[in-house]
Structure formats: structure tokens, C-alpha cells
Length: 91
Image (cartoon, rainbow, N blue to C red; front, side, top):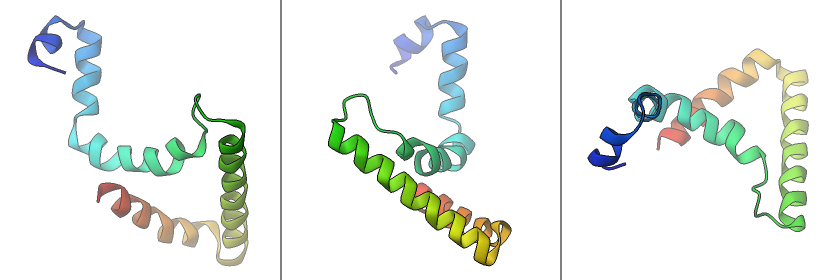
């Protein structure tokens, strides 16, 4: 967004832009969203084969999460996975 676009935007859009560009969002919530939620849904332009691929991947990830949670516990699993997701997302 250029400075002219920013100045001509409504207040709500400027606030949303500033929040999106805040370091906590860009380096904290953004990576978590990108890895945990953003990649779990097929895009609107995806074909049938890509949609099936995304759904099969999601099912596989769910199976891994359930198996790991049952063997080592959900708390231990999250203590291992969340830092890895966060660091990978920031990098």
C-alpha cells in the first residue's frame, strides 16, 4: 500500500493494515496461521486432484497428531511442535 493509498483509505482499513504489519502479528501469529491453518484448505482455483491431495494430507496429519497425542500426550506433543512451527514460520 502506497502512502497515498493509505491516506485515502477508510479508518478501519488503515487500522487493519497497521495491525497486519505489526511485528507481533507478522512474526508471531502469521507463521502459526500460515502453517497450522492456511495450508489446510484447498484454494478456489484447485482442481479435483489437488483438492484430494490436500484432504489426504490433512487426514494423514490428523492421524499423526492423534497417534502422537495418545502415545506421548497432547501437552508434550504441543511443546515439541509449536516451537518448531514458530521458528520455521519466522525463518
